[in-house]
Amino acid sequence: KAGVTQTPRYLIKTRGQQVTLSCSPISGHRSVSWYQQTPGQGLQFLFEYFSETQRNKGNFPGRFSGRQFSNSRSEMNVSTLELGDSALYLCASSPAGGLDGYTFGSGTRLTVV
Amino acid sequence: AQRVTQPEKLLSVFKGAPVELKCNYSYSGSPELFWYVQYSRQRLQLLLRHISRESIKGFTADLNKGETSFHLKKPFAQEEDSAMYYCALSPGGGNKLTFGTGTQLKVEL
Image 1 (tube, chains in turn blue, green):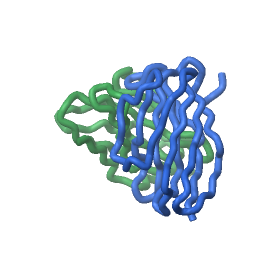
Image 2: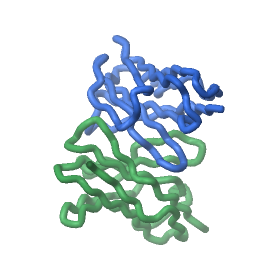
Image 3: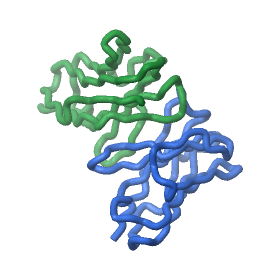
Image 4: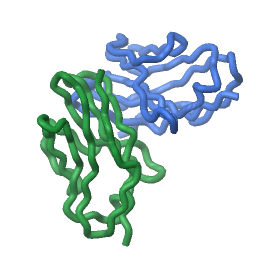
């Protein structure tokens, strides 16, 4: 079966712009999580959605937001981009989250210049 | 707040030698613990969950609540085990994973 699909794979944006990243979970998975990965901070949790509701949120500023659609696809948005937002953004899906474990996508590499 | 510590950034072992990747955690409640692995040019993937008490690819991990540890072990390392290993904690079986900084395992011939 198809894995977790993230688009686009690479993005280059300018400071101050906004960006939207997309994630299509494995069919039947209702929980979608987002993580930011950087060399300095490692993997950090952004937020998790289940059945279109945000269930959990990490310690990121309000510029980072997300949503989930009725088909479980998810998007995350970053507004007013800063240089420090350059990172690999990973999406992960799970049947219901928690103890099921998560299947990760390949990520979107965002570079802010 | 929860925290996961992987003290070794790099661990080199010879093929056939035992492997132990260390993971310590701090969390006041009942954590659920996981090991994730990332092979070269591949996605991050779940290796094993403590709740399953399973052995995957010869790896096992035991939760020691007294020592707040969840070390990953394998009796005989194989070349294909070379990868980046991340320990992760989910508080109370929730949906937020806190990852350690990872340990790069290199198995030498």
